Length: 399
Image 1 (cartoon, rainbow, N blue to C red):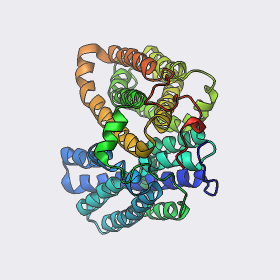
Image 2: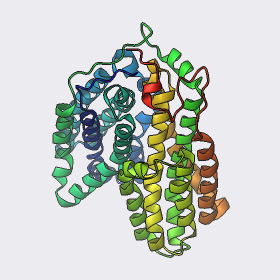
Image 3: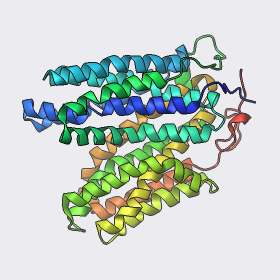
Image 4: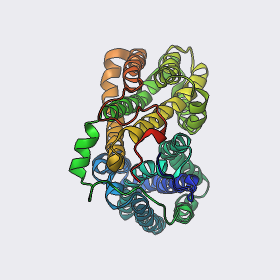
């Protein structure tokens, strides 16, 4: 039976991550607006916006497994401490009218946050008596913070520009306060886990490979979806950019409901549930007669895409070698952001070849195939100690 450190409330880990992620994302609208004012060049603003995602692509595979080597809570604490310093620096630099140094600090705040999610996701099963529910909450906030943080920052920017920057400071300080000071972690079975060994062991596990491919496919859909939606809103629906904005908001904000959706479809097999909450609403959006009719299925799609990411995270928690769980999650993080960027890059060419309806139907068909393959129930094999659908307690304890 797996050892659980019941002295730590896992909700504190989730809350600390949510606060830190929102704090890091909050200043970006003000930062991009400041750069636009001094640069007056959309290409430079685009590069500045890309700086928010570049560390996730370039560093997640390398730094995601830091918690496996130095201790998972220690990696999170170091990450949060560094982000406190950098978020304060971003606020000070922006308020002093220095957007380029502020951009450097903001990019560094994203980079030092890279080890946090893989380490927390690897740690949660050791402190939670409800690992699936707590993992769903953690993944939901990890994804939603990319939407919620800039959304709050944009609202504050419209109301009181200085507050859109300064508000990030108490949030990141609160994250440091909420984060537990210590937790009993399972010691590694090897003397010093190494990244190269971890990558080899992680990618040798079939269920981990399936989870990574599945979550990459989901993020290709996310990346391409915006381009296709904008095109269909302006052509077939003749509704313009405002409709696109409402549908994008419905998708993003609905991602917060993923834990509730996971509970609602919990009795279904993972593959069937994914078809119902991803493929079906995507097809309904495609065939809708107008943007109003597409709003509800779009919200279900946003929640469903996040639910699938919760599921693939849980597969990696259960399937990855215990010493290298954070490595697996770090590799997945890097692959996820790269896939979303690839989807956004190829979407214009696919749109020109297939049209918006053809592109959306193609995304639905591709999603159906990948989700059916990737989320099928696991089979016991010598390199997989438990099925991805099995309870956590079936894994070797190692404590």
